Image (cartoon, rainbow over all chains, first blue to last red; front, side, top):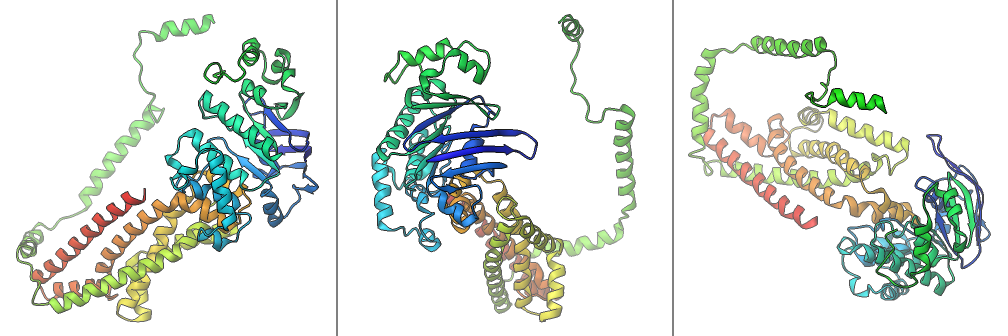
Length: 267
Length: 273
């Protein structure tokens, strides 16, 4: 579905953010990308849809190789990659509906989007998605009137209305409280399952990642240090990814909490 | 460890002062005294002819007193025509100037435009800002002759430099992530501007436009002095004829209109936040 081959990103400053990363994600797999700050998690995600230009290497989405595409072709491929951001990245002065519909920009012409005359099917889909995340009544509110959790749900709708094949999710819970974080993660994972979407989720909360995903990639200094199921994250493995620390508490927390929303989590 | 402890011993109990901006004391004092001496010398070279000032005070008094009895009626026809011309010049030049400014501002924002476009647009802004309105007006009066056409063109030209520069700076300081999110959906460049950039800079654009409308009106009163039409021409004639009461009337009207515009722009800006 999505395949990275020897992906390298070296910034102008000389920092090597990614060192020949290889990764293969099958259809419908939800994958968590963990690692310390500066490990290259965000860079990796942004290199896939080329918000950051990779220095070398290849990215395949299905059969299409993305790194060599022209601007127009890249635009068409970006429609198949929904992105969800840290801090939501909604356009704050636009309404909720405009934000959701902006996910269709790749499919409609300029004048239609300029006059906000989207095809009826897009509008219907936007309402269906907003209803699915429980925000249909907020459609005409301005985005900056919403709470953090609500904004991120609008962000999810914007990504899904693109009808993507893969979701790129960058720290979706970084600025949310523990309960909302779980709700958002659960929502993303449920929606991926419903639609058979693959997803890469950047996340620094190891416990949260273990709770929801089928596969975890540990990144350290731009290289893959761990690739396996969430149960494989032993204290030793976490030490190789993050460095020396007492990891027992982090892992135990995951074992006894299941679906109890209010406690723990702050880890 | 013991080193740090030792240093702490010496620090505790001594007074702390913010380190001075210029480290070397002799240089610091030389700069301060040099500036003071220059300032005194500079003021001494401005010579004042006190006799002339005394004579002029009388004329100044008449001028100020004229405000107590402004004459709106005897030249009402001229005032009306001049004012109408000024307002037409103001509105027309603001609309044209703003319409041209927006694409130039986009081109002059480094995060939106490629380098060659950026350089061209920045040069246009630099030229527009380097040439003061009066100088442009004199040139345009020479080309197009006396009248509001020269004034209209001058104000449009000046608006471009002002609005493009400030709008471009606002575009450059916008929230990058919001725009990035729109780009990630596969939007075209025009759609990206319309959805990702425009909503972020709209309040500033409206605020600046209102402010520029205000400036253009005030400028239109000045441009008449060099023959570029508007109320300034009427005002200039009134001064030439020592009709201070008519001049006072014109100035009062200008003040009222500027205050009204100020009030209006306050309301509009509060609404678009």
